[in-house]
Image (tube, rainbow, N blue to C red):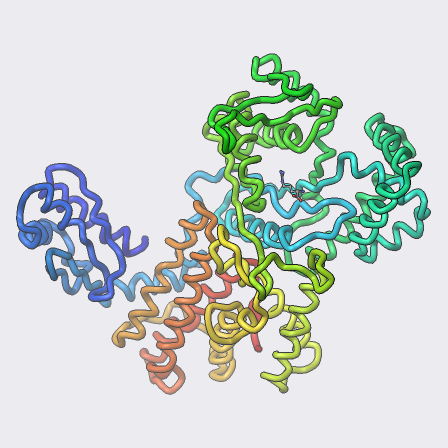
Length: 572
Ligand code: ARG
């Protein structure tokens, strides 16, 4: 039970008595007391009475005696509430013995499909795929921990006309050489070489076009070469996921091609439902509400004029499969904001067709771009897109060097391990601690800094707490009695008991910067506590109580960072 809810439950009946109708007390943390409720102000306006009188009357009816040490009217008519130390201490004690740290399992677990990462075969993953991978994986970890059945869907771009030229290029190179290039992760140069030949050499272009037809027709040799391309790319993506500490596995690849057999029925059924219109030879659906700048209705093209199916048809087939065969009720699409319109239209058409009906719903978990220090889209020095592995290597190298400087006592192997955890953690946290709807600037200095809202700061806070227990050579005793006398102890306790609420909110809105911000506040509250309240130098019950606060802080930090996909080394 979190405190906002406890106080709300106590105040609501009193407000209802005074108002004659239900009123939300709007309880929130307050700079003046522990909590405040401002609802008396609006209510007084409605009743045409002085706000302080209304607030005082609410207090008379409210049953707060066992929860608050002080409950008083302040200013123009606020209610200021101070939580009794014993109540707060009781909540902390309950948390200390709760393996779930105050985060209940979902009351109604559901099947959630999370569509994320989704790079394209024979193409380098770019930083947009990095964002999708990091955010999607955090969503998967969090929803799984809440008890939902999470299905990871890596909607690999593994089909379409470019495969004609890619397969021809592969055939020209020879299978062994092509496999070698691809397994090195040199996907971009492979793709570019194919593209260059396609543009310069008409005979090659013609062969490529015939190859597309052979691929679609299921020609066995062509299919074998295609599979080689897909498998090499998949192996490469898996090494990137391993580097990134991402939970995606081989089983989660559900490439676009896996929907091929479902595309014709999708279009047929749309026709049968009377939803198709022809536009320039293409079969289209015009979902209600989709209009362009000029006010003209916008079409979703489900079959191109050449008879081929494209991206939209595949996404429609995938929705149908996810709700129908997989039984999912929540469909998440972690894809950049430029594709927002596409998804809005796909969801609208799926709803029209009856493939996406309540309780099933789809959400586009969109995100902005990563910018370079010049404030523009991140580019490599040569002007091309930045190679994801290069970025990860750089993060690990920088973090490892910093780790060696800061703590020369760590052995070689441990420094490398810590450098990896810090480097990867820094990349992920820089992403997740920013409002995902916005662009953010990739700033090495800032994201690797030990001060501020960064992964290294939180990881350091964790390792520092662990070192307290190492130095004292004591284990945590979660059953010890908690007493809260110092303001810094109370402030830390309030943060600790807020974990459940923030996790519950993020499960809804998938705004991970709220979880990041929470962990940062928690670590800062711990710092303030540790500065003012001696732990190992304290004695008896005070020492035991403070050790409970230390241990609980470490456990919440570790669990919170784990949900973000970030490791917590024991020493740094
Ligand atoms: N492969 C696509 C791209 O790189 C992303 C796919 C996103 N998922 C989906 N169901 N459309 O842009």
